[in-house]
Length: 80
Image (cartoon, rainbow, N blue to C red; front, side, top):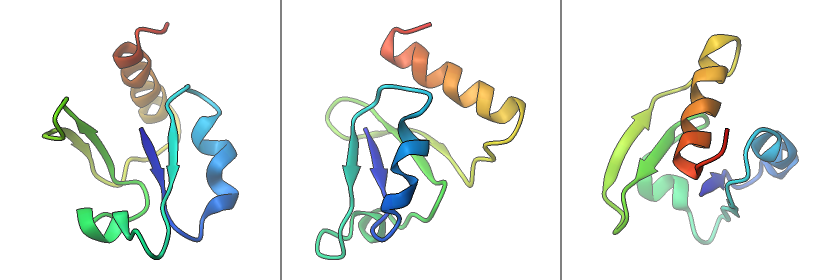
């Protein structure tokens, strides 16, 4: 699941352009980003049960870095 930061709803199309992960829109009431100590482009992969599996810190979405990330997400989803 992707969590879109509160106040950045205009970014939703970019989040869903390359993969089919569900997206949760964070709100100022839920404050999910604050609960995780995250900021824009912090990407967490969680194991079943909510344990942290991987963290990408300020992932650059330019060039091969984006390709690597999309490939890993697709592998997790069983897509090519």
